[in-house]
Length: 299
Image (cartoon, rainbow, N blue to C red; front, side, top):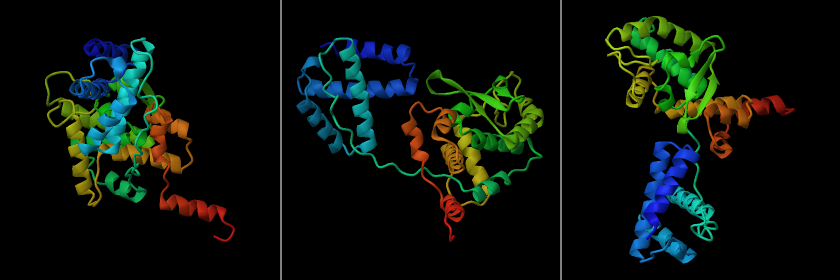
């Protein structure tokens, strides 16, 4: 059976032509391997022998595993891309996944902070300490730019340009983009870099160029960022939850509510597809009230 060679070729396609991230590639390969295991069980030994009836049986098995609609949707998308690739390479004559319908996914409205909650967060730190300065800079930058936590912990000093207040973000799939930040983030970053970071860096004999350091002077990790944000939430006495992506959601929600266009927000977030950004088109009650008061003749 020619599955291993076709999977290997698809792997190189994702890596070299698509420049996909390692995590994305792993998900693709896992989904494809699961389908290959299913075909083995069904004694289907050639890729060209796969038909719609086989796919329906496969989907039935997925639902019997109590997988979410989102997970099933992702697997269909992976397999459709895989079969598209094989059709392009003339390994098969048609893609049996071409007309497979994707299960409808219930999109939850992303959680975000209201402005009064953010004020409490921004006032929760002791800015006379190195860790307080670091935490403030971290929070200001996440909210100012909407970057992912994985992008935040990759930042080094050369990525920050204070002359035009932008950062160079190293995003998914080794893609880079420039994102601006405002005066509050600028002040917090400059204070931290000139004072707090200098003190933290002395805790480590090795030279570290990462912007955000832990109390031992080592690069901050994804887990470390989450811990810091949770501690800030407790100090601010807020009852809501917090995670780095919630600040990303807040960034996008506030921009769109204040009139930013979708394409600009897409670019700032580093989304490949506009559909990924459209999840933020919900509006807050405050925004609805503001529009109503401004627009209705008898408001």
